[in-house]
Structures are given as C-alpha cells and as structure tokens.
Length: 296
Figure (cartoon, rainbow, N blue to C red):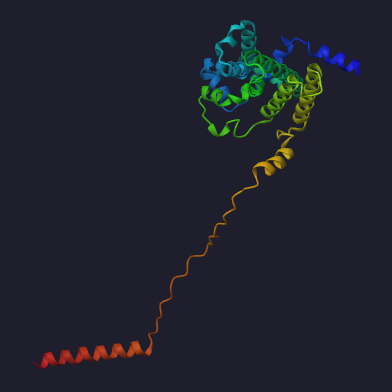
C-alpha cells in the first residue's frame, strides 16, 4: 500500500508540457478536422479554421476565466503553448498529401494520444478546483463549476466553435445532451471538490491516480469497441426515472387514420310510396291547371 501511495505521489508530479499537452492539442485538432465542413472551411478561410482549433484546444481556460471574472485573453499570454497548438493545427490540416493526418488516424497511435489527453483532464480539474478556491474560499459550487469548465470547456462552448465555422446548431448544446467527456469531467470535479473539503477518505495524489486510470481504461475500451455511448447510461436511466420521471404526463393516443375513404351517405335511388304518390298528385295538379289555362 505504501508503494502504491508513493507511485501516486510521483504520478501527481508529472509535467504536462510538452508530451501530454501535445497529445491534447493533437486529439482536439483531429476531432475538429473530422467535423462536417471543417476541411472546406480550412481551404476557404484559414483564419476561421485556426480560431476554431484554438477554441477546441484552449476552450477550458477561456471558459474558466469567464466564470472567475478574469480576462479570457489571458490564455493567449502563454505564447509557447499557442505556437505549439498552431503547429499541430497546421500539420493536421495542411501537411502535404495529408500524411500527418493519415498517420495519426492509425488506431494504435490514436489510442495512445487519447489516453495521454485523459491525463491532462485530471490535471485541469485539479487546477480549476484549486484556482477557484483561491478566489472564492470554500465556495463549493464555484469550485465544482470551475473544475468542470476547465476540463470540459471545449465541449461546453462547442456551439460557439461551430458558429465560427458558419454552423449554428442550438439543439446540439451540451447542456441538453451531455457527451461522455462532459459528464465524466463533472463527476471528477465533484470528487476533487469533496476531497478538498476532506469529505473523501483519500489523499489528492491517490485520487488523481485512481481517477486517471479509470479515465484511460474507459477511453481505450470505448475506442477499441467503437462504442460512443456513456458507460453510466444504465445508472442514469434508473436515477433519472426515480428522481424526475414520477410525474410523467399520460401519453395521448392519437386516433388511427385509416387509408380508406370516409363513407359517403347513401342516396336512396327508389323513393318511398308516399313520395311517389305526392309526386303524382303534384304532376296531375300541374297538368289540370295547364289545361284550364289553355281552355281560357
């Protein structure tokens, strides 16, 4: 147990730059390129494509700065990371014959890069929670929100990133239909906030190791099995039905519309005896009157 704790402590001291940050930039830009119309935007407007890629790479820092009333442009102050992400963007979109993109589309390399990106997710949650605590001491919701924004900002501002590329899809808002990365970032932010208040019987470096190993294992499994559904979906359905599905409105059954035409009222071709006698009397009366006029 002591050996595991020591390994977790060394793991928590790993520097994210340049390898893990580079993997984060690579996976983010690859995902941005695979969006519908992204290649066409890159050929028509490199500036829009670059800005969209930077939002994917640094969306967490921008959203975190907005939440804490700090200048969002502070993300641009780290010129080394901006240049690094720009080089990755250029290689993914404009490398001759798309060799760079094809190389990292190879599944084993893609899996390794995605696993390294998940490591940065843990570090961003911890940084977001710690930074929020330094600004708003013991503010539980602020710490959770900032850790969540720091780790999943690229997904949370995806509508704005799409707008840069000329696409507006408000129905794809992450708050309406959360993706797995956004959900797991929220769970992680809650866990690290609880640990900060000493409500979890575990040290921070131990929680970082456990949470990161869980992220990597789930991400690798989802990529190898090509399953994009959240592994929490069964639990979400049970909890959601219990908490929010008790007062569901009854379903209104719509009447079935048959393909047959509506039956038209039948018209009796053969009149009744009374109607026939009335017609005869009227005709005889009209004939008698006509003869009378002729005689006159």
